[in-house]
Image (cartoon, rainbow, N blue to C red):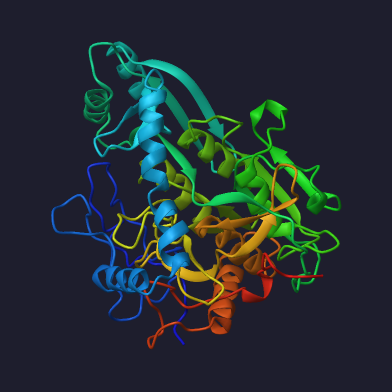
Length: 456
């Protein structure tokens, strides 16, 4: 079998959009990897008319229609609601928080009148100040060897105009909006049923990184857990989403186990309780912390638009041998690709239900590397009931991340190749080919699903 690693054939991002993507990622993780199997289409510029950004969308739409005709509520109920969830959230953010959030040219939410610059030269900053830009912040990304600068936009420019002006001042530089990213799933439907123990992987000196909302370490699933935190100036701000994802990674209670109980979790809170989502500058700083701590495998269950700063941070981590696992999102099979899962080198994960069918709301395309349980299962909840039913690709990604983490003790390119190859060899194929746009190399981690109606 060809080496099963993420996409990228040396032709950049393949989407050539106005956000300045397409600066070349080599061949995935920079490890001399095999190309995708024949017939797996590369991403297109989904801003151009007629390009969907994904493959197999007509067939996927037909499957959804057939599911609706046969009354499959799992396909048409929660899935349909979740598929519209991000669009509703973005629309609400732009309406409610218009004083701090605005839309970029694509309609994606960004922090109002802010731009980011990647390791700009001092002369560039001086020219920007002379133009009326203000330096709002400067983050030294120690783990990545770079600097991220936040700039305030001059009054005479719109944010979009200011971005164009900044690019003119620094043609060779990387500049972008301060995009906001949101979670990729819904969590917390209460469940009072018993839980059976999953078959946990062997415990050991495993370390896993998480970029998400805060984790409620007082939950019973984490009573035996070792958790290191980053963000929020030392405050602990638990979130339902972050707590659920963390439990699937390392949870360890009498009747509930994540994939890797006993692993040490490095939990970076990119939200800090904010209702506006995680700003990309916070996400990047979180990744830099995980790189500095030499955490080999990182789970990111956040989704959003392409962003040059995020792409740069992803590139830097992949070159250092980290594995990045990300949810592909729940915007539907015909939706544009979401990031960071769609960057070459990132391991994108889709979700499957208890009948081993890909969730109808899950994204399709070359960004999908694996599928894992993503609905009809339990995870830790915040509230009176300790566990809740979860759904979405957010909750499939940590299963893959924890499985891969078993084979890595430090960032290492060769170990990463080997871990992904071994997991692909174990995957249950869900199509006739070696790889499909729905499930990638196939379904993994079914043994770790804890069903809502399970009994001890």
